[in-house]
Length: 532
Image 1 (spheres, rainbow, N blue to C red):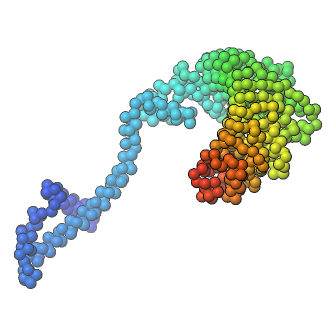
Image 2: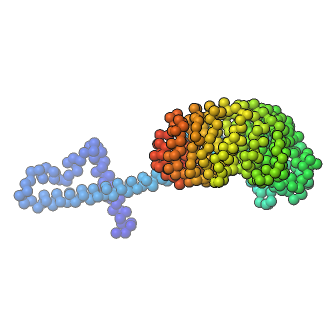
Image 3: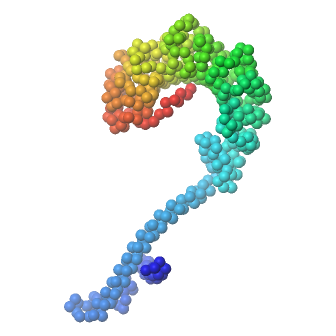
């Protein structure tokens, strides 16, 4: 049967079936005698099986064949309708979504746009190309255009963003003296931003080593002198790694430390990488991130300058002190004369992060002994311990991180990150940590064999323990860990044990070792996040 003929037959049968269904609908869904031809129903009731009535048999057989055909057609039609409904539902979803979005108010839709912009700064451009309403809302939302990205290839786009951002606070990221020509150099971006510098709320500057550092910093100093930064709250500067190898710091400090002359009355956060900072005027500064390089032979001299800088900001509540990968190893530092650094007390400091994965405890001790923070609440440490480290060496690290001259009555969170090898048994100074509630132990890529809290002591306020990045941990190791908690009396008051990044361990095994009620399972972890 050809497609055309089959269609005609289907349509004819469909019309007949529609008539019958209409009659059924009129009768409330019941099939009655009106659908039977020539009183067939009454004739069949009166007839007997022994009667020889060819006409009745023929009429009944014809009617039965017709009803079976309609039944088959109805089944086929039902299957076809279900398929069509599924296809129609899948095709109509974008229209349903579109009409659902059309019911959202402009304020709600603009707020959604801003959330998307936080994730992807380029979303503002994409949203403005969807339709007329999206374009009008995107262009009319200044915050969508307020972030100048680090990787920008068009000066026209930067100028367009500055225009559309209107009076919104700006988040500016510039890459100075970049080696490639695919993107704009930071000098061009800064030149375009200067007329709008009074709106800058966050400024991040990344620098490569310039071909001619004297000419480059002279130009940068001239540009920066035109900046007006009354609303600046966050400043981050990343210098070239080996800048000091070719620059006489004392002679050209006014150019290298160009930021020190800026007027930043609202600055809250300051980050500097690969250079010891110089003091500047920022009365509201509360958070400092210092990444020292150790380029000089004596890192204590670099630390002394850092402490002098920090002393100018007694209102600090957050501090991160990090020593870079090119810091001389302990064998070299051991040859340096032992010094006493000036003591720095930060009475309002609540959060302290120390990154010293290339230092030894004996080298770090003069640095930590110089810091006093009586009201500290959160300590994070990233240190270097190899698989051959002894129990004594680990305890020395803990004494450096938690020196005896400090009090830790307010300490609630302690993070102990070991790079790159083993986490072994160690002893916490329990008597100094009466209010410690959260303990975070991190060993990226490590295979911990023994875990515990040492031979004695108890943390009375401990509620949560988190193990991060212990890829090779086993069910047996977890069981020993729980046993140590039970022996120390911590298990009863413990509310949660979190395992992060234990990719080689099955969750059900961890639930047996720890207990399903107290286990929190997080399979992945970014081991490089170390924020203040």
